[in-house]
Structures are given as C-alpha cells and as structure tokens.
Length: 59
Image (cartoon, rainbow, N blue to C red):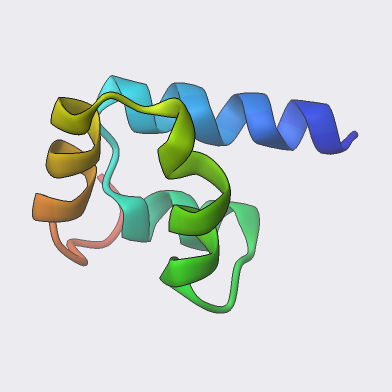
C-alpha cells in the first residue's frame, strides 16, 4: 500500500501539482514531510514548479 502512495505522490508532483496539494492528498501534517520523502525523485525544474505553485488549494 505504501508503494502506491509513493507512486501517486511522485507522479502528481511530476505532473505539476503543488507540493501543498500533494501533501494534503496523502495526509501529511507538514509539507516539509512531503518534500523530504518525494523531492529526491524530481528534477530541479519539477521541484521549482511544485514549490512555486503555492498553497492554492485543490484544482
């Protein structure tokens, strides 16, 4: 089950979802937790896009 959660988070971040949105979807209390676990799988460009989107809620 954890593998599915990881796959979901990584794919959504690569699609351009904000880190805040992904963090809420997977239930992390802190966005820092999401960054720590998933940013290592993203390119610098993908990391910048995920971070710059801001806390804009659900699309």
